[in-house]
Image 1 (cartoon, rainbow, N blue to C red):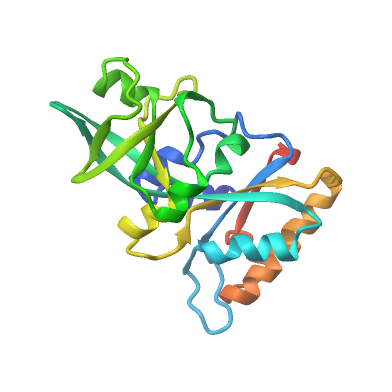
Image 2: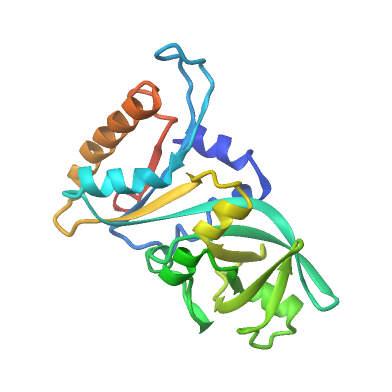
Length: 239
């Protein structure tokens, strides 16, 4: 697990600044899954190989592990961007999110709303910004309904997110479908999936679930089911 975190923390601006955010406020009966790098050669593949989760894996988890998982969501981190409004600019992290992830991470909306299913379906250029963005670009005023530029792309602000205590890294949240289209060129890879356990799941059930999920994904992506650095699973029930 620690090796996986070290690898992830060294793999990009948005990822590095976003990885550990929200763990403190995440729901107690929840967990998160990350892709990663293989550490052993397996099935003809090289020893070190990056493996990503993909959109379709969310459906696999819900359909095949429904006894353990009640609901699931996802996000992807992108490279940081220069956010601009009028003559003010700030460097910000960019996250593509699904609507369900906000409550799972304990995120609090101060103004407006979160990313919703219509944003996702229509791949809208909508955005939720945090308080750091509001303070710098909008001088503390409610920016809902205004348009900011992230690089050369305009996003309409639909909500303002409460910033985690001691967090100074600004963040812009956009629909995952939009982010994958614009920043991933249609590639449906994911940085992280966050899920909520079924009410009946106990702490002793979690290792069984984790190993079963890793084994299932190892067959799909061709890595050793004993390679703990791939599909690293973090959960609040064992925190």
